[in-house]
Image (cartoon, rainbow, N blue to C red):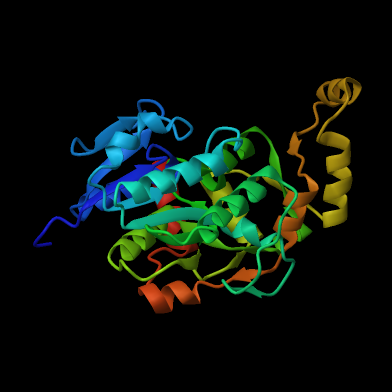
Length: 322
């Protein structure tokens, strides 16, 4: 690039998604100010300006918004309790500092949990029962209720996976190394995936297209697969079988028995030496049973988004890191 493309303030910069975004921004000559709660285990490029702060304490980061052209909001507080107010404050302070763009990372969970169909950005969000989904939807409401600058883009991310972190990769691998994961309905539900590097690439595309008004995009790889294929790929990395098939009803019955087992049940299972199977709650069961497909057509048409990774290519990056 002939000129520096600007300075970007990234929240949650030391997290799984945040650090991939930071790395890609640096590669494309952006100056980055990275908001972190604590010194990251994995060091950043020396050019990154680390801001030690907390979203719930705006005095710790407000000065760092000066001279920033865009904010990428990738952070959540540890218990979700302060996220709505913290995001509203961050947006207001960004507007006051003259920030032009605000990119918020949301999730497809805001659609509730449709059991089938094609889900587009025109599909109405649904208020779900779990705290995470409620928080994500409420944060989106912060932006919809206030049309003042900076201009906002909301990315509703699918299941984000990739090397060295993330719930859908390392956390699952860790859990499957300790026991077995339930394949609901033999894993015939639909996995709507997105590789973490493709998430970062979408952010880069948005930053290159400023002044386009408020926008919402589903971000998936556009190549949905059955969950059994995804978990088979994880088992390939572990080099052992780490799943067990149950119907949705069997999984519910198992969950009622083992999500909060009595001391007696735990003792009996330990004495019997039974293999540990991770119980799922009803929401997770419905999620894994769903065959809904989340379309990324709008991101393709409006942003020129072209996912680099399908499941096979994406899992290669995971296996090489493990």
